[in-house]
Image (tube, rainbow, N blue to C red; front, side, top):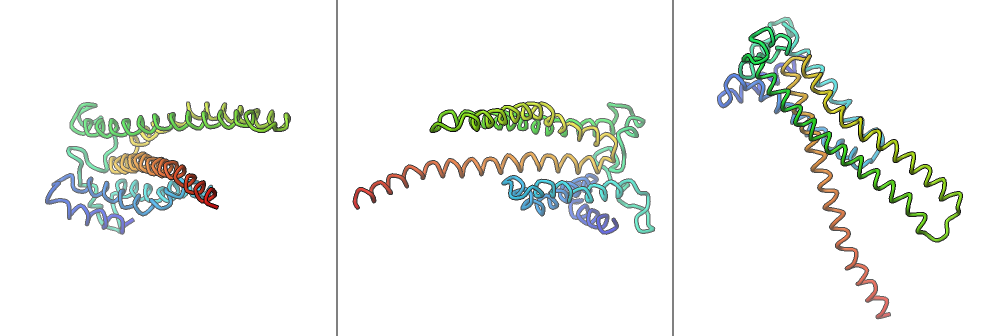
Length: 249
């Protein structure tokens, strides 16, 4: 933990001429971005569905970082010395403060309370963004399952039993997707509960990493759709060329 403390403190000193007392808070955001950049290859592999484990690894590898962040801003001493990070602030709120403590220092709309309200508002915006995208993804998956179930009926006389089994499985999948589509997006708001009970520094980490996750998936989805559109645009040209070769032969 002392290595993390020294790293964040060093980043804070670099940013202090520009950001003054909020330099350490900016250093936490920068540190989180560096962690997510290091994990980006795993996130990309998870998005592509390379391996079942790939989807869990980015989350699991972030847990130790979050716990170190939590303890670094909860401990009065680090390595037998006073924890220098506890004296740093984000505007009026100490980075080691919790929301319950901020309520006792001026109430909900006091100087510290307003900082936490701003943090909660930003997390709520990211959670709502994630929830909307989650519902759209679930709806798209359900539509794809419906199309897959209808496809055998348009094929060349498939066996009746096989078609019925495929339709039955597809119906079950649609129901599961419908239920998950209503529940999973709401889990994004669980970050709000966590941010309300951990130190402000850990809440900043949660805000930054969840915002990165949503933005990263948007970017990866955009690249995937762009590649698919490019492939569809090239396909007719390739078919025309192949047809010309056949006619010439």
